[in-house]
Image 1 (cartoon, rainbow, N blue to C red):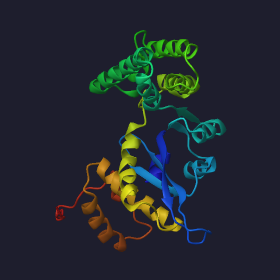
Image 2: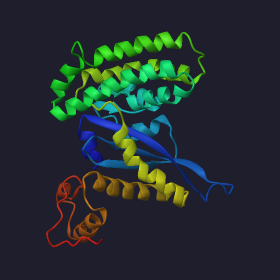
Image 3: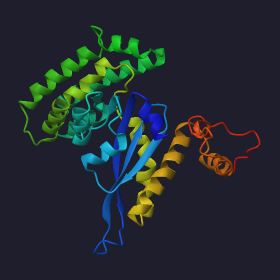
Image 4: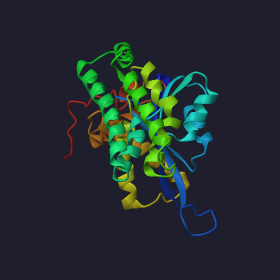
Length: 284
């Protein structure tokens, strides 16, 4: 599944913290680990377990061979990876940029709402192009048309600069403007890549089950068990994304894999390719 994602030219990435216990470490408390997540719209979702959020963890996950688009929030690890890999273009997440202005409405409703309206205008146009089922090339052209996203983005950039000069830097609105302007290069890179989505919401939705789950199970019992959890999340969440019943998928795959060898093609067994056998009965 990870090889399939790396072979494409568009990846969305994110990470979420997960606590774990390590009996080999002194003390009785838990430690902070991370589930790193890779996907692309319409593709499988792959979770990978790491005990840290260091920049090097992303490098080991993507390797040096990946070339294409990498979309994420503003975490510096993604920017550093793109800088050291000339074949990678870093794309920002407009949902993260929007979030700051949404939170600033209580503090400065007039300016925050003006910025939110410009962002909403971009999303309305994107939805219209989705309904028209535009190709990547057509969407790139529309984004750069005289009345396209480029014009709206430039207006938003000018407004953010104007607002930033008139509010306190540490205010909610000041931080929202700073995030937008500091992330302007990856945010505006969408203008040149019509295959991209404006935000990382799809991968954040894929992470949500693990965020809800850890409120119940609290932590991973041992760091060596983290990757097993990552594998299970990869399979289950990918099945859900493709409209497959995870239980039916696992029942079928686990009955077929023991009869297969390393020479067999595993591609038909991926959640994105799997077809339920006609004899399979789904357990309610």
